Image (cartoon, rainbow, N blue to C red; front, top):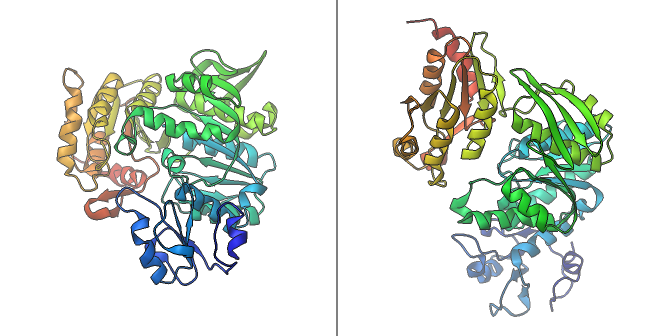
Length: 480
């Protein structure tokens, strides 16, 4: 692509209109004739390598300051943000030909995006999905490593979606994706805010910075759907200037749930909007899923779907892998797999499951290594509020000692009376939980959800699928 077409008049240069062979902000990917974008990261500043990248063959470098490189430097105010605009131009602005629905918040993003995709797909739209578990183009599944892909990869994915006829893209928009401008110039028809609880403070530093990162999404949308049961949601609702609607399952809002009845195999409730109410019965359980469904329906209405169309689309929907997922055992106790990995998420899943648990509610959980350490005791305290029995184990220890993580978790149980056991090996911990389970008990495996791996020191990934582990242990339950 010619340089001037790529820049679209957004930056000045004295270079001739040369052919550009590629874009990158990674020093390992620089090749002859490409543009190298100098981005400052947490441990490396691309500006320090600019001259070397020119020597390596880059046609020019994008910088935020004068590096003394003459005509071969193009200076912009924010190189990270500008890189997103370059990537969009490189792929022919695929974001302009599709409509986008973005979902942000600490919990609920994956379920809401998947429900919205189903609502749209069942009613004649071809939908792209970008999220934590996987990316999808219609029925085609694409592996992902990040909730929000890096911007070059994202724009390339948009291009695939547009080329394959998608008219809508539904995406989880992470705080990382927003502050790092990974979404480029994407503009959203609708943006949904779920909630904000402690997470990623190892990156953002404090809750205010975390909130401000999430808030960025609502400066680039036409319509906001906001959970006003959440304290940060109430604040956001007051602050946003776009058209907006509130949703609630604990009170009143523009969309709210009433007469909620939870069962082990599903939920029924009335969804109220304006002066109309609609009865829903779904194969998803938990108050948090009632909130997720309410938000999804609000976004669906904005997209032009009718209530009747959406209710029909949800009749046989069983939810998302790893989100309050019942793992079949054929036994007289229940095993549930859930991604809950924050104190608030633990409270949400356990408080909901508690309502229909006939026996004891047992919770198995751990905390990830190399992540926010302050939430470890809070996870334990949250679990102790609702569980009758805890099994504390390992999650993704990464480069930390699993027992040291567990010791920090256990400080959150001081002053509580809930019984607990420590089993550091997660596979053995699951077996222990199943052995302890009695008729009517529910065992919640929290933290891994959809993940089918465990991350060990050195970034080593080993296969670990909790569905397979449960199935593997079943024959041993009756062996003394």
